[in-house]
Amino acid sequence: AGIMPDMVTDIFGGENVLLGLLNSMCDDFILFQVATIAAVIISLPVVNIVFAAKGKFRPRTVSIINLLLKLLTIPVYIMLCFAPVIALIGSVWGLGIALAMVVLTAVAVLVTALFSIPAVVSNAHHKKIGKGAAFIMGFLSFVPVADVAMAVVIIILSNKKNAARPTQ
Image (cartoon, rainbow, N blue to C red):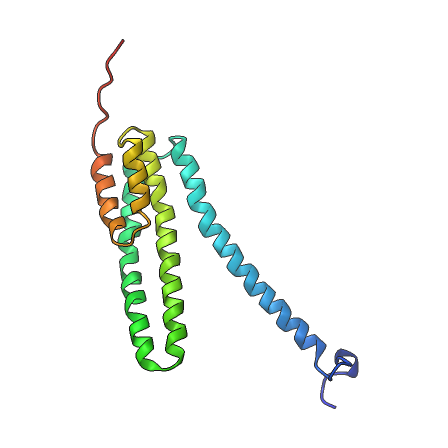
């Protein structure tokens, strides 16, 4: 019965095999899209870190880009902060929404931190900061409020001239 021919229905309970196959393909395609976007988001900072370590970036330029990225994400953090509160007032589904917002906040912190590492590496490569300071600044880039302050400090330090090396 129905529009679909009998050969596309499954003999085990009469489910439509074609619709099940299409549904499975859509789920796999969405998973593929999410995995592709995640791979791009993770690989871009890694490539930038490699280029920064090789000295391909000017410290000031990469530091300004880092600070702009941090400042552009502040409204996202504010939205992600208040959305769970509003969701919890709403309904039982609010708990799921609140949990999703916590996960999105963690992902946003991770992505912006990964994009700030090239600024730290570039400044360390060009001797604007020491290795100890680079380690501390790299760690602080994963702390939500300290990362913006650290981005400002990196810009200030990227302006300084390298210390004159004694000639031998």
